[in-house]
Image (cartoon, rainbow, N blue to C red; front, side, top):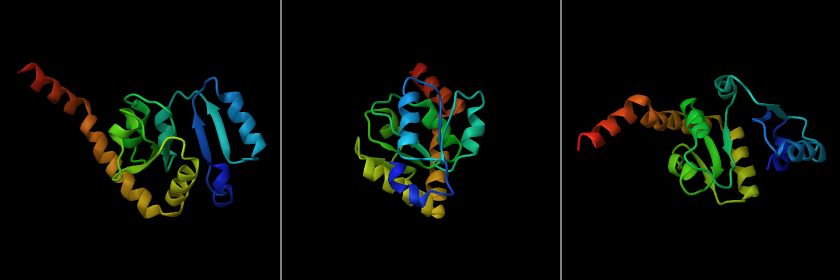
Amino acid sequence: AWACIRTHTSEWTLTIVGEGQERNKLEALIQEYELNNVFLPGFHNDISSCYKQSDIFAMTSVAEGFSLVLLEAMAHSLPIVGFYSDGGVSGLVDKTNGILLDQGDINGLSQALLLLIQDSDKRAELGKTSYEKSLYYTNEQILKKWSSIIEL
């Protein structure tokens, strides 16, 4: 998806944080498509600093349960781009705080990223709503919900 919009992203970078068995495949794709603005820093102890340096959060999992990284991104006021999935992404993201696409829609992912790259107002609007939605999941809010269940 990033390769499809590379001519529009020269001032942008794509950072994939984390470590896993797909690293070699990702490194090969970066070389194959000559993506000089894609970085794989690996595991990071201070993920909050990564969110603070970001403008968009892309969640491209094929399957995902309730995603803490997605909720963290929302708490950092990031607009979300991702694929529909049962539970996780679709449960936290809608058109008010992000752009959801059909599974595997790489062209749609490219276009959604490009839209947010080019439209700072849209990024800000979706990011603001992401933050507001994340407040629903604060410790205080969750404790209130548990208390109301226990008091039944």
